[in-house]
Amino acid sequence: DRDVTGVQTCALPISSRCAKKMQIFGIGFNLQTLLEVLVNKLGDPVKKVASKALFHLSEVVREHPLMKLIVVQEVERLLFRNNIGKKAQYYGICFLNIVSLNHAEAQLALKLVTVYLAFFKACVKTVKSI
Image 1 (cartoon, rainbow, N blue to C red):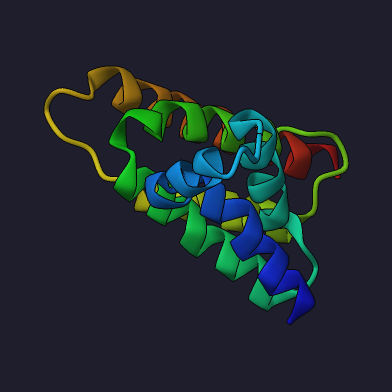
Image 2: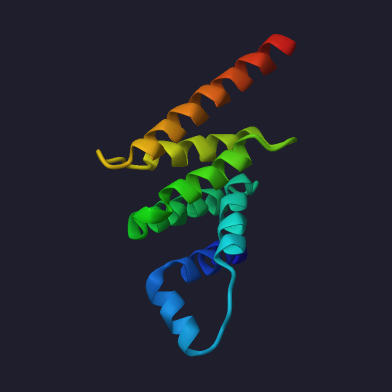
């Protein structure tokens, strides 16, 4: 449960309400670092922690639609890291499937298709080398 609380702590500052409160009290934070930590939690060996990270990432893009591309790029970095676990890749792909699109987000749609195809290509290449 301590790990799940850590995931919630990372996700809270990304939400606008919590960010405003933290600014009032003079607590500084780096959103990019918090996002990296939250995305990295998708690879946590504890299933509850990884699924909670997935939930919080989906909440972040729901509350902040302009961050969708940034979060997708961070998840892409996770997917193609060296020595990344299959479960982390699974949760990363699950997140990408959750991202909703509208007609004005052609660049995001292109990015998602590019990531899916590159990931598929990497998986096929891995299977052939075995």
